[in-house]
Length: 168
Length: 166
Image (cartoon, rainbow over all chains, first blue to last red; front, side, top):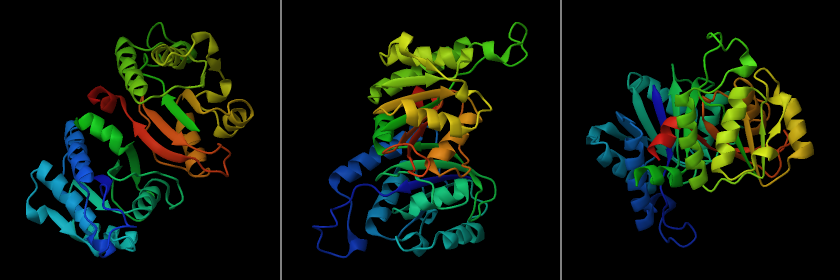
């Protein structure tokens, strides 16, 4: 399995946005950059069969941009509470194994520090490795048999700026 | 500070006629070409090493020279350390870094498995870390300093394949 760990793109500022945190939308700049990032992923020959996303608006909007670029159908984008900022990564892994265990290329879209802790668990066995995932940053892991523990090999980690450069 | 860890480019295979000495295996033409592209991308990313330290083995030295040329680093300022040999443990090179290379941008050129262990020691406090450092790949870490107890952060990991698309 190839797993792309993707942090949502730039959203409205948490300090000035007046609605619920879960309803903060992407900014225009965030959308534009995310489209380039999605193009960058295509340029790198990435494939996607499934997107699992946090239900928060900034994550689902990021997922929509990615889904459009990769021509995914609605049923290939799945929201899960296991990817909210306070969700449990071990339950996310159970969900992947129970419902999507045979899918080859999966992207998960969520929040920090959840995502970098998860990446750390998958490549080292504990959540303490220090990995930076900026908004729109992507980490690609190859995995034989996903579990909550050391099971993955990090193939690459790219900042949003690097992916924008590739995507043009 | 930033630390760039670079694995040498593609070299002639061990044991190929004429290249029996592991320390003297040179880069292949393909290895050189790919390395030049990686060097070019690093330049575009604004990489400007203050110190470049390399394994003394030929394939690492040639990789360091390609990078030095593109990044405008004087060839005669290249530093070589046996603590970057393929089977070296990371503790000694980290001690050398702390003693001698406390600079804004440090570039380290070496081999697997030494480099992977070094990344693990710096970014996960000595923990073993599964990371795929292919020939010519570059891993960027950031840190206030690089003592083991003050963990470095993994910023990016770039492969030659990605560099070719950039």
